[in-house]
Amino acid sequence: MSKLSEQDIEKRLLQFPDWEYYDDAIHVEFEFENFKDCFSAMSRIAFECEALNHHPDWSNTYNVLTIALSTHSEGGVTEKDFKLAKAIEAIVEPEED
Image (cartoon, rainbow, N blue to C red; front, side):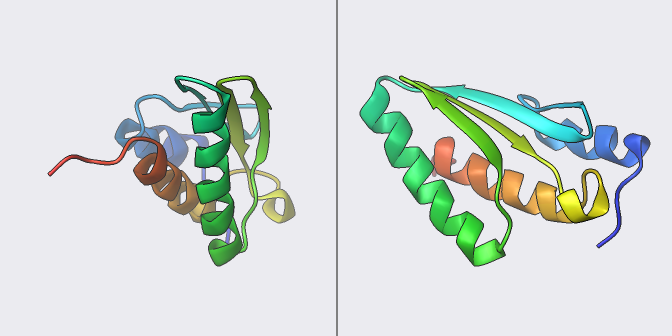
């Protein structure tokens, strides 16, 4: 999987308004009601990461989850990062029917 150009990344980020591109990664921060809800989301995201064999750089401080996605083997952002970002969005902010 090859590294995307900055133009391609910015174009794809239009689908992810809460995400930003800098330091060769796409970044987002989510705030939850409390630590338990944040940790629960992290646990669900972890299963998606394993299924995709792609793992984020992330941190958790109380009710805030900070995520950076980059494909280290390619030295930047690839389609794999956007696939995981889409899965993360579906977990954190599920669409209502």
